[in-house]
Image (cartoon, rainbow, N blue to C red; front, top):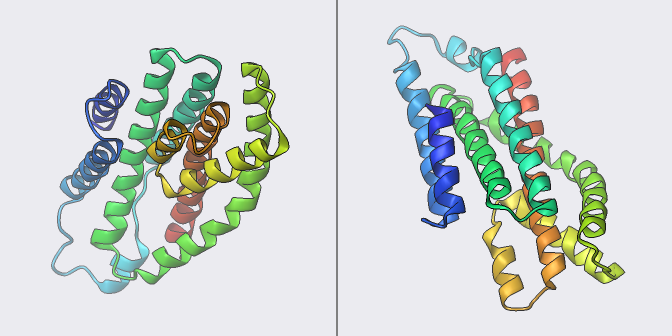
Length: 219
């Protein structure tokens, strides 16, 4: 189900048959509904201690999430090298599947875990990933500009990296296109920023989920 919905959302996204935010919202909603449907309500006699410490997340779910994240990241990089629709579809589908997987886990935490403070702590701890991601996203930007034959100045590099990282971690990718159309940033810088945004977003999600799952299960 997750893969089918992800592919469908990816196709709609590439064909521009809906707002990116609306499609991602639908994806996340489907993920949470699938988790709630699969798990069902907690048993009436279930103890609070049990509900707080037992957060089931199977190895197959982790594998699915990692595959989806790699799927989306390779799609983002392929989109830099080639503007073909197949590359865009590969990237959009991968991120849709990843969001579905993440939503299932979040649905489990939000619906069944009564100790929300741990979830907030994980989110704060996830900010430690930002410096690491920035360093290798800069390398990806250098590779992307070299492939496209662009001769960007240092300010263009800074703009592309900063904008890409910011909109990547906030998930507001379409704003980069708006900035490019209104000539707020250079077209080449916008393309690189968009690629950085995709890679940074999915990398942060992957690291955060991996840490969060391990912390929830060992708490």
